Length: 138
Image (cartoon, rainbow, N blue to C red):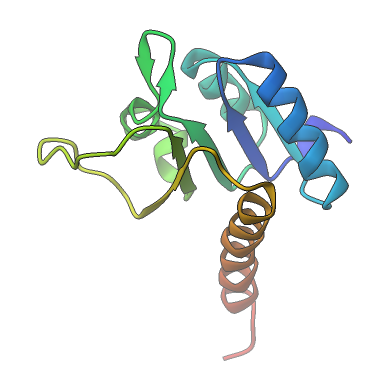
């Protein structure tokens, strides 16, 4: 699969997890690419206009995966695009009132693979419906 057709960007700092999940997504027909940190994530988003959903681990070494939202908002081109956000965590996420978050989903580790695939398919389906309506007959 070419990166230019990826619909999902997987962000996790554990390369074995990235490889395993990318293989699993490919087996279920979900085109995806993976990166290990937020700098790579921004670069991947800049070069892959087809990406619609970000599946991001909350703990990325010294970074918080939640910070991807701010990076996208501050980026001139990426802030114009619509993304679905799926955060994956082993911890309880306590909402930070200072952090304005877009609509997002959270899965708690250990994530059942079928739940992950079903969630991604549902999120991608929403984008397909949106584009169908945008180009549809009035």
